[in-house]
Amino acid sequence: LFSAVEMAPRDPILGLNEAFNADTRPNKVNLGVGVYYNEEGRIPLLRAVVEAEHARIAAHAPRGYLPIEGIAAYDAAVQKLLFGNDSPLIAEGRVVTTQALGGTGALKVGADFFKRLLPDAVVAISNPSWENHRALFESAGFPVQNYSYYDASNHGIDRPGLLQDLKNLPPRSIVVLHACCHNPTGVDLNLDDWKQILDVLRAQDHVPFIDIAYQGFGDSIEEDAAAVRLFAESGMTFFVSSSFSKSFSLYGERVGALSIVTQSREESARVLSQVKRVIRTNYSNPPTHGATIVSAVLNSPELRAMWEAELGEMRSRIRELRLSMVEQLAAKGAKTDFSFVAAQRGMFSYSGLTAGQVERLRVEFGVYAISTGRICAAALNRNNIGHVTDAIVQVL
Ligand code: PLP
Ligand code: TYF
Image 1: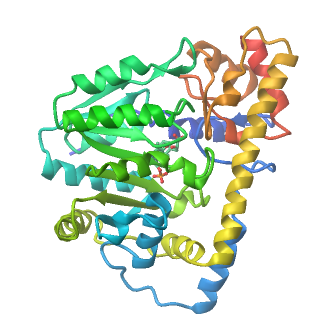
Image 2: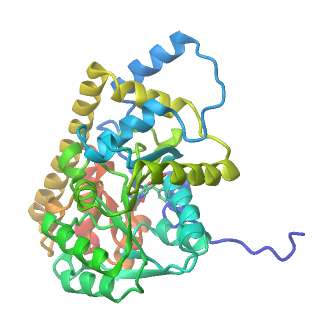
């Protein structure tokens, strides 16, 4: 049965973790995977999460099956976070939200549903994008194309290329967009860009699939949802995949959601019934713990305030680390101007380092980054940043 089975390629990001774990050098640093580490170099357990977990354990709640669409109070809290507390779409019953296994699970359920809706569509992702976007939509049976996004020459956006590529897609394409904190570049679209993109998508009858995996890591919870809110106001039909992996530091609990904006309450009922069918035939219903915790935090004013403060601390700490990195590189005589790193948003930075330089960082200094030059700024801390900036100056 398995004699002809070939070795599959490793995930370029998660595969790097294995190499990092096997490295015995004490000063090794993992800037590969997109995970936020605190000043002690550990994944934090947020205080709001601890409080909610204490309450949950004390309640000794039974562990029955959840509804296929997940916890109702969780789904409702997700909608408010994405669309705003006073969203008319929510009031009109025009948003269908189902709990999902992280942002990845939301993308996959969305992709499988799309395969029923638009079986012959093209899916377009940014160039570059999170590698799993391509793999996931291809495995759902879609051809995946790139649209221009990053302009390496100025560490910015290739605006004319982006709009032209979206215009050139076949009508009714599915366009995957990063709402904020673009993975892997850290370079985001501004509101004017979003308006122009929206006009093109509407003119071409494309269907937006907005991926928001880092809400709260850019500017604020509300500001990071600006693109979602803009599309909501436009009256368009679109999909949103969202994740609490990073914003609640609950990576392994797999807490995310798929939200679909429809044209009416009646349409929502039909759409929900089909999304439930996709979920049922994949994993029946979602797990309890993570969504219970997130729901408890988002629905309690005290825990919510605690969480927002902790999320704000993570966000400002990453910003400080970016600034320190830029300052240290300049002070150590780096031949390249790295000031663009401070302007990028979220966890990631396209550093401009070449594959050869990334290789040298790993081999000579135990500093792990993605071969594209992507580094995770959220893995820096006061203890390792000196070693990292020394190493970068050496390999330039
Ligand atoms: N989308 C993007 C852009 C991401 O960077 C990630 C990161 O993990 C995900 C989706 C998936 O999120 P999750 O870990 O919740 O599956
Ligand atoms: O881009 C990252 O590092 C995160 C984590 O298959 C991740 O989004 C990486 C690869 C993957 C799943 C999650």
